[in-house]
Length: 401
Image (cartoon, rainbow, N blue to C red; front, side, top):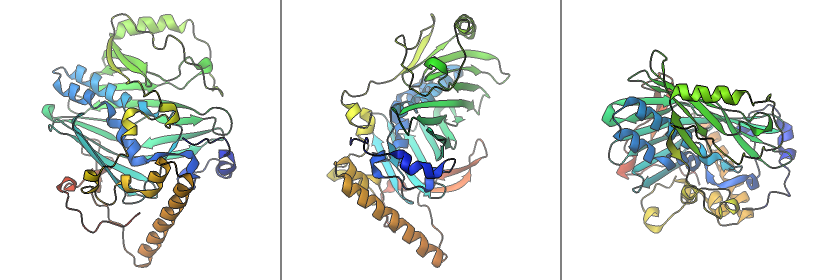
């Protein structure tokens, strides 16, 4: 990492209080050397939870694993205060992980607003996981809030089941002065469209004295809203399930020792006893520790560190739009910050010119691997995979780098 101490983010951001941040050009020093398409791929780090869900016969147990997957999917955001690079229109990213049993493809399908679509599938044809994300960024003076608009859809093919949910809001605090820290909050409702079961998870805002920092809790309920089990934990480390009555008794007891809640400025210190494990609980998911040098490496996980890797063999098969070939990100990864900055400016300018030329010739941009359409389960507007990417037959690809 480069030191960001000599840069004031405030000098850039004070011009845009309350504005949408997607239109502002940020200096490269605030970035991390990954594209948002690669950052999205980090949802897949704990794919074993999807395989596990597939193998279970009880619908409630499957929902527990899907809930654990939804929570684990945002765990890599912890302490990731660098901003991923905005993908260029037409940029793509692919990842094949034989060891984790999936392959994924993503494409930047829109530039204003910025929308990234992805489609992942199990290598044993056991699942499909897809969605499109429009990270709506808002600046509130001391913090930047990112609301990831868009639906996640997970299909467990062996059970003919589909689950959908939306991700929590992520907030980066102290962007002007002090240590940057991250929290996620909001409700995440996972629906099983076949059985009508729902899992409603609440990602807690921090609260005074940091009592609630990173906490997640909620219930799985059947279609008549009867609580089948309670879930609790922290999105930064683990998720447990327990019987609802036991959970409520514990909550009642805990309430008596709670104070009032206000927004803190300083990052709260984590409690030493991180998550109190209620007797009778079952562990659903536990985070993999980060590598020892993570703090010098943009707080990346081991999974994130491998995302931009490029070998000769790969270079001969991936399309020229893949972000591993994007020069500004590569320069930053190699420690060439001035080159990264120049390349970022050049690429943004190239994108602007291409857009102007298209509007002159009244040409519409055509996405390659995704098309717009209604989500088959929720009916909301979505981006759906059009197929054929893995045939490796790439022609007429846009020249974006």
